[in-house]
Image 1 (cartoon, rainbow, N blue to C red):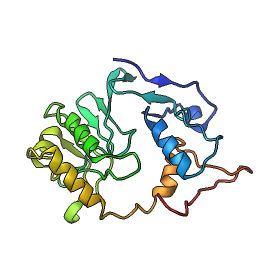
Image 2: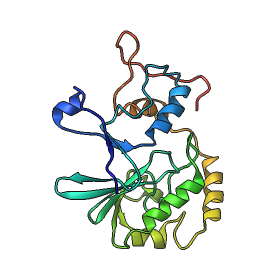
Image 3: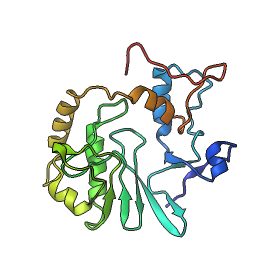
Image 4: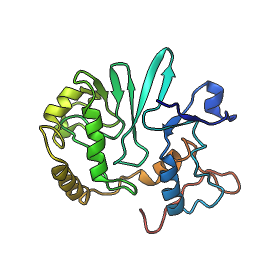
Length: 216
């Protein structure tokens, strides 16, 4: 197993507080795609250097005395990762709670087939592995939840559980995604997220967000 690419420190507020931000190395694909959509120009670096570390599939890293594993899980976006820490895995947008199913795969760079394959990586972890969600929408009015297990997902996930095939998933996901509206905050979120949480600024240093006329 390898270790992630580490960029030199920069005098930012997160550095002053001791925090670091790591992300999947394919953030460069996201930066290139949306750098063009938002007409960011050559001054916007597309090499992932806004982040402190870039993770590749199979990279390990330390949190205190714990060895953690990064697993590349594309499909929702090219840069999605799952992080396994002890008996827990943080799955990002790769998978939702069993009654929530899975994330959409129709954003630029997304792919329903890749998402299915990525979900299978998660479901290949030990049955008792705890899974922590990035999002939950409380289907049917239930209380918000954030934790489940591999076994529960395999048995009950409404999109991939119970032995659903890749073809079934791709057909369902593609048809469903075609009915979904563009998320309300996607335009500002993308511009900030691809800069590791920094709000873009104009040439005079004022915070500025762009709205493409043709959308995404």
